[in-house]
Length: 397
Image (tube, rainbow, N blue to C red; front, side):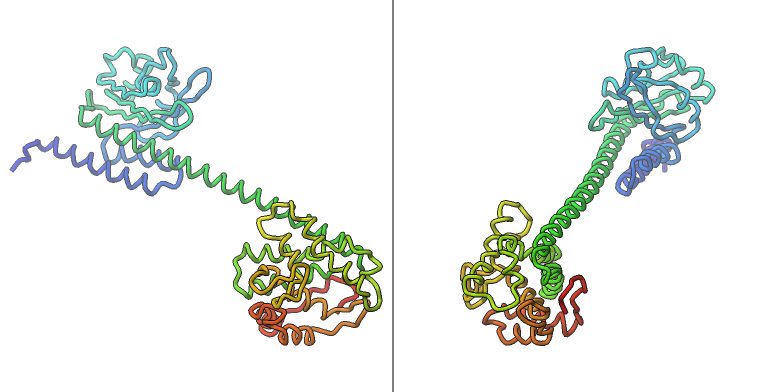
């Protein structure tokens, strides 16, 4: 039994449906613009049965040229030699230029009799082309382009075919726009990562410079801040802080004694016990370090951590006498790292006591002076991870 539409009509509809299905898959799976354009052109020829398909992009230049971006089918040399424009000239009044300029579909039903196709008629005859359609591609930023389809049959594009191809062109334009947006987003993200890396490098350099200035005034504690920073980093990781939080703790620990630039060097290097007045001068360094950095907008509470790194859980610390959770976790970590490093190393007023004695101190006073979780994490760093201080200093362990 014959289909009521007729065999040819039925075959044509089936080809169209298959073409749409394949084009949709191509657009969904497209990774780059050139690949998408070529895939769609190939489907129009291999599946839909047209003779030639190509995409041209309008250039915003004085000649208003149209550059082929993808070509598939017989007649590639015709497209490359056509010298099509979208300006108001004879070579801009063909189907491609008209579609781009007017943003409307342009159909040539019979190339032999259509005067607007005269500039390319000899090329078309050689290829056996009889009719064509140009469908505008509306793209963000610029004059856009056109999807061009050629047939060796006269009047090959009826109303249904035109409607179907217009939908395809709209989807293609959307696909190209999406790919370009994704490409631009990737470019912007890469630029942002590079910018952040440069900023991070600069920040790291500034922090090291600040630490160096502090330690130049006290040769006995050279490398102290760097080593406290390394230990604080290891403790923070053990407490399962995020990468960003660990970075903030490490930076704060690396400059925690910045305020000592305000303490006389003869007090810092005094080979004996400090008097009450001298010790009070030393204690000023926490507030001084905070005052130096408080106006700098770090993404972490660096200044506050420096201010609180001598606070203790029972309120016996300085300068504010904070208790328990009132103390920032970053400051609690720096406090433990600072005590362990200081006790382990030589000071002008006492010999080095070693790691074992330092760990005994924080274990004995966990929950009293030091955060218990931080104290436990510090013990684990040395017991389980076999942590050792880097040898980057003079006069230490």
